[in-house]
Image (cartoon, rainbow, N blue to C red; front, side, top):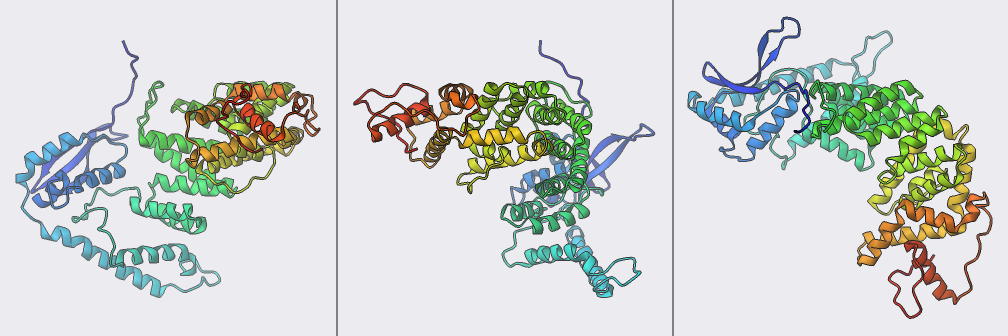
Length: 512
């Protein structure tokens, strides 16, 4: 018999009549009176509008659009769309065929609001005067600049139909998420190298739509990127609070829900934990990590707990927290390397370091305080982001007690034989992703090069690293014909196998 979980069901939406209209409503219990009250979610005024909701109107995509709009607006409710559509279809003859004033009302309301805005801008001074209480054009520059972009987009000749469809569907008043296309546009600016412009727009968006969780999350990430920890915490706490309110009050421990909302909430908890670790608010970071683990992300939770343990000089706890996740996380490998070093376990520490260096070389270099060249692959950009995050998480330790460990790790990564090996694996990975080497042997070599066993085998070959002579010249390989020697070395270090016999084809030959 499967495990049972005590999960509080979400309120269910249903359809009812009101006069000549159809309503989608939900019963919610009042927090003080405890009476069930109806909340109106959406109103249909005509058969034409209802047909669009059913996907049987002029635009079949309207049904999916309506679902997305309602779910974004009401994340704490549960929707059985098959049942709702059946109920609307059964009651559709109750509606009038058309309701012209419904489609005209938004236009009239918009014009009135635009005219009010014009008057307000005309009345406002350009700059605030001494002793004024605010309200100048300059103080509203960010909002006005974003408004100008929105207006230009809406007035463009090829502007797409509004996401709400031909009926400008309206829902119950209250906090709501921003339009998806507006958020996506601003995130695109960020990805395109315009973070300042994206941030200005996102600030306006969350002011206009206080319930816009993704906007607060994006602003938190932008603030984290530039090290503004107080602002990052403010936005990420708001994102976490909004996300928590949209999820069931009682969450099953196992299996944890993997809905889009649950995953987004876990992401924001992780970002908040990162901000708290960097701000040296370790107890709060641990509490946030505990909630993250409850939401099903043990790997991320253990990373932030391990970072806290490093700052508290709890080396054994940090190593234990990392051990279970070494196979899937380069960040855990790097933190484990520092923990093992502080425990006085040089072999375990260098094995973890080499494991990180072979599988995510950019992350290892950055954690060791070394520079990296521009990323050439998305995979390399991801590795670089891991290195930046780990360095930020361990900053207090790395700039104090961790200086010696970091210098030791830098010498290991710069060791001639280690550097040659990492370069060989990196070139092979680039060739694989570029489609230049796609044979099974290459795939096997790459997979083996990114394992703990491979790192341990290479460390055994390079005993001088364990003895602390990383900067010294490594033992030279046995004498052989130089070109053939380079070819065999490349095969040997990537596979960990014996060199091919004379005359046998070597599948991979990379210049060191």
